[in-house]
Picture 1 (cartoon, one colour):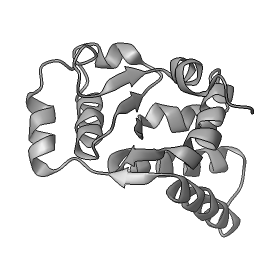
Picture 2 (tube, rainbow, N blue to C red):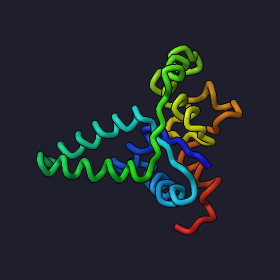
Picture 3 (cartoon, one colour):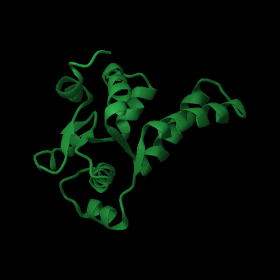
Length: 153
């Protein structure tokens, strides 16, 4: 199964927010039996957020860059990267099902990689496309409940 992760899934994990446990289980277990995808644009955002978090922790160069590279390489080892083509970006700009264009680009990147599931913290951001048969939109907890609940931690 191909699982596309919205950028907020990774930020939830990196910043150890409320849904950290569900996301950690997905990253640990799903990555061994499924293919995880992240958008190219999402990777840029994550790079910025990792750098910002390390600066907040008062970690400065050259150590900050060493740690940042280590974290980002681990992400690249876990995820395949999907991009939205020029056509996909145009589709995203024109898609009136979305109130936030960035979410539309994420959706187009998910389509481009052939994702079966799009995981997001904010399902409401994808409400205009959630009833289609192309990609199932799920929260981390609903994914864990449906696909990983019988899997030992």
